[in-house]
Structures are given as structure tokens and as C-alpha cells.
Image (tube, rainbow over all chains, first blue to last red; front, side):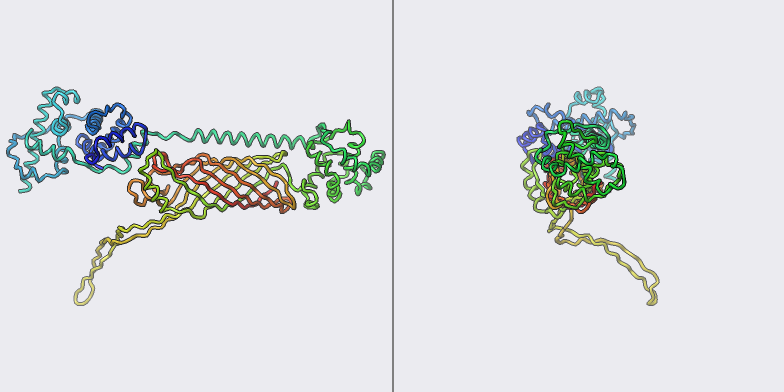
Length: 186
Length: 443
């Protein structure tokens, strides 16, 4: 069941059941959000197996700390935030080395809209996951999740300016890759 | 936000992916780590061993006392003066003569009289000096009461028994031996019901029990949504003939009560039937192409392919739930007539091994899934240990000879714990009535 198919009141009822340690309800809640959250984790963590580990850890945190959800905002947003934090924590533990990449001067306008709209979800996922770690995190957090540079800087422990510059670089890399795809298609 | 950003966000933000099937079970294991049942099992095992040891100690101690030469006081009030007087009246004169001719006791010429003399001497003591009588060997008060009250019948038996040694005439130990022999003898058994069974002793029961598992499902976690699933399982699974087999040692004390323990193997059989109207059967096809040249086959090429055939599949699987248990039963046995005796048994079965084989419907997809313990990809539905079950039975035994009895024992077993894990939506418990038949070996 997709999260879109359940309204917030039925989710809240499920949460109440989960708080009463109803395992069936916990499983239902997991089945509602897991398909979407696995994609969130995969966007941050490079390997699928690692993403699965991260999601497992995050769901354990969610069920253990469910009482801290205040039933006011979006439960999906709350779940997503825990997924992202767990992913970032996992990445920081692994001490990723800074990856260097060569950026070419590419104008965004040079990307043909047709090729852009031909890309499906998997293609876009592959493009995002091909980004170097730091760029990928900032791109995910700013573009997909909607965090501000200030929040990103706080969460990643970097300067706001670094966050901005990494976003710019991430965009350029993506444009570069899309143009290459465009050339191959021609 | 640029077009590229917007396009990426719209495509990705609600994108869903596949989740590994076993992820929930992993999360559940972290959330609810299984409490080790080992300590409880070991506590039960230690308690069981202690009970066995205590029983054996008590039994052996009693046996040693009986074999020794300690003097034990006789509860004179237990004797029925009427019986004693009645007997001694007719025999007292002969006894007196023996008392007077003590020197002749060890002579071979008296062998033929020995059997009656032994008993007469005791009876004479009871009859003539009842206030000061004591018994030299370890015959228990109860047995002496029986001995005295049934003295006539006892003598009828005892006169027909071979006497082991002449020089033991003086010893009450041999008298006790004679008494035991009389009890074990088939002769006059119907005339003497109280001696038709050895009250105390160690026996081995070998048995096979025909059973029928009465299953009951219950909803765990209080969720009514699984009602439909429960009905599907009830519809697709039916009970079949089941059985138990095992052996148990019965340690019976002189008080007619005792302990029975051993090993029990049980197998509950069920049949799973399912009709899948949308089944797709995969068939493998091997195509061989021959290459001809001038009408002769010079080569051949083999190709493999698969095709799917749609249709209805009728699935029938025989499910088995197997368990190994240690019975720990308290038993009370009493004598009947005509070589029969009876027992009432009650106690627990401590499970130390459980596995299952077969197919049931999945709680999530309602499709058939393999639940066999040997299947590494099975869903974690069933427990590996069933804990403690309750057991009760009424036994009837028929004495075949000195060493063997036949036994028939209607019994009922109740599995207190569910076969399924608490994470599974349904509990699955059984009441198992059965009819046990077997052979009792007496030592």
C-alpha cells in the first residue's frame, strides 16, 4: 500500500496501535512506507545492500521512538527525516574519502528538454547515485528534500558556502552526464 | 529551482522501490529479541533430574531397609485381632511344638514342613505375645497388615512355593521373600486380589498412541483484520490421523504412587489442499535441429526453451508437526481383579525439539508457502520449541506374566503454547486425544 493511499487519520490510528506494541500494525506501517524509503536511502548510500541496512536501522529507530512523534505534522516527513539522518550517520561512519571530479563548463540551457523528459526514474536514480558523495548529499537534501543550505550545513557539519558550491558542482556534473547521454542517443 | 531540478524532484520524490522480503523479520528480531528459552529449559531439566534422583534415592533406601536386618516396630493396632485369633486358634498347637523343638529346625527332614512353619511361627508370636512382637526384617507395616488380614489366602499361596534354603527358616527375610514370591505368582491370583500386583518397583513402558490433533486458531495481537486469513487456513488445512510413540520409566513407590518419565515423540498430521485457478505451469522444451547434407544428418543443434501454460493447479500437501518431549508424570496405580490393574496419570511434557514440514497459506499474500524447517527461505512463522504441555491419562493393565503386562491408556494432551511465533498474526494450539497401547516390562 502506498502512503498516498492511506489518509493521515488511518496512519495515526496505525501509529496508536504500534505504540501499543501491536506487531501487525507495525508491519502494516512498515509495508506502507518501506518501498518509498528504500529509494531515499539508495539516493544517499551508494550500494543497495548498504541502503537496506540503513533502512532497517532507521525503522528500528522509528518504532523505538514512535512516542516522540507528536501527531501534528506529516508522519511521512518524520520518517523520511529519520531515514536521511540514519543514512548520513552511516556515511560519516564510513569516512568516505573526498572524491575529485573534473568539471567541464557546461551551460544548463544546452540540455535538450526532450532528452530530459525521456529519462525515467531509474535513469535519474542512476545519475544521482553516480555523483560524488558530498555533491550527492547536498543535491538530494536541497533539491529533493527541500532543506535550506543552512540546514544542510548543520546536518552535514559543513559551511553554508560549501553546501552552495557543492550543489552547483552537482548540477554541472548531472548536466554533463545528460549531455553525454544525449550524444549517445544521437 | 531550474527545470532540471524540478524534473528531478518530480520524478524521484515519490519513487518507490522493492524491499527485500526478509527485512521486516529482521526489524522485528531487533525490536523483539527472542528471550532465550534455554534457561527455563535447563531449570526444568535440573528440576526433573532432582525429582528423579530424589525418587530413586527414596526407593532404593526403602529397598535397602527391607533387605537389611534392622528391627522395625510393628504397628500392632493395624492387625485385626479377629483374623489373627481365628487363624491361631487352629494352628497354635503345631506352632508350639515347633517352638519347643528348636533344635530340629535346621534338619533336612523338616523341609516339607518349612513353608507352613515359617508363617505359623510368626502368627504364633502375634497370637501369643502380641504386646512384645517385633519383626526382624524390613517388611513394612502396611504389608504386614495385608499379610495378617489375608493370612489364610497368603498361606494357600505360600505353601505351593519352593523354599530357597532350609537354614533360612529362622529369618524373617526369607518370609518376606516368600511373600514377594507369592505376590508375583500367578497362582491363586484371582483368589487374592490384593496381591495381584507388585505395588512398588521400577517398570519400563513401551508404547504407541493413536491420536487426532484438534487444532484451534486464535488471533494474536488483537487484530480482527486477520479473520479472513484465519478462515482461509481453516478451510485449507484439515486434521489427519496422528500418533505418538515412546518409552517411559515408571518408578512406583510402596504407597502405590510414583513417577513416570522418559521420551515421547509426537507427530500431528494435517492435509493442506488448495486450488489455484490462476496457476501458470512452466514447461521446459528441448528442440533438436538436424542439419542434413545429401540426405544425411551431419550435425544437430539443441535448443532449450520454456513455455508457460495457464490453468488451475490442485495442490495437496501433507503437513507434519513433530515434537520430542520429556514426560514428567505423577501416577497412582491400584489393583483390580482377574489380573487387571489401573492407573491415573497426570503431568507435563517438556518439549526439547520441534519442527514442521509442509505448506500453508501466507498471511501477507494468501498464497501457498513452504513452511518446512529444512527450507532455508521459509518465513519465520513457527517456534523451535513448544515449552510445556499438559498430559492426563487413565491406564488399564493386564498382567501377562511375572515380567510383562499389557497396557491400554486413553490420554489427552494440551499444548499450552502456540506452535507459531508471537509475531505471526494467528496462534495455533492443539488438544490431542489419543489411545495408547503398549507393553510394560517389570524388573
